[in-house]
Length: 210
Ligand SMILES: *[C@@H]1O[C@H](CO)[C@@H](O)[C@H](O)[C@H]1NC(C)=O
Image (cartoon, rainbow, N blue to C red; front, side, top):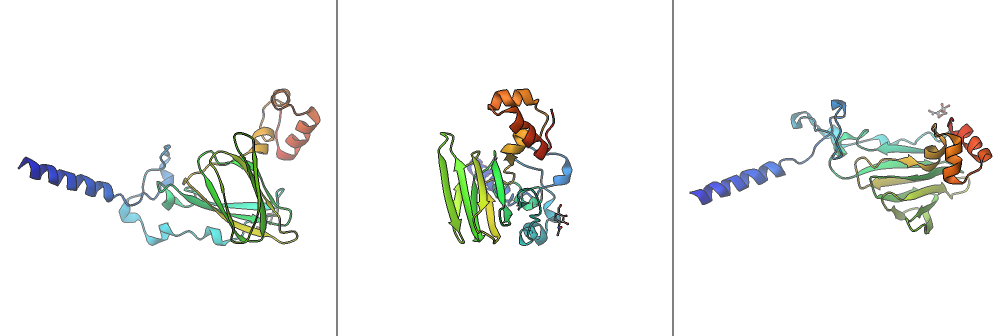
């Protein structure tokens, strides 16, 4: 009798665990934890939630970097909540660059849809890994490491799709971290060995103060 009871509890427990097929994010809940958002009720989930059309639309590259990143992270694409992955579209106009940055929360895999893109990352041993990719090539960027992408297709645009090993990879752009906030310039200069003229110039371009 006890054995049968235990067997039933085991089946019931594992069925309950398996029943959690997905957890479409309730991004309006105001609650977000390191493991993601709470789920919307399964009865309210539809096929529409699992599809995302945003990556089919070219980003606006009329900006200082001549490039655009269109994210399909959990904020834009709530169905990836809890699934350990997300994506983005990179549009690089001629001369375009995705400046040196890191994703603190995810590995990245970049796939070149068209054009040529020079990609590089810097390991924590400060070794540079650099490669110019052509259409169909992929490259990985390990989690947390500084990396960049530069259009290498001359007068033509390039397009890439990137995927991440987290619904919320995070994005920190190095120059924004240094020059787009109010860290007092004397401290910035002391802690980076940059001279005052360079710091003033970049704070001017990127909107930093202090
Ligand atoms: C692209 O961005 C620029 C600069 O913000 C803006 O002037 C322009 O109207 C935008 N183009 C489109 C198609 O949205």
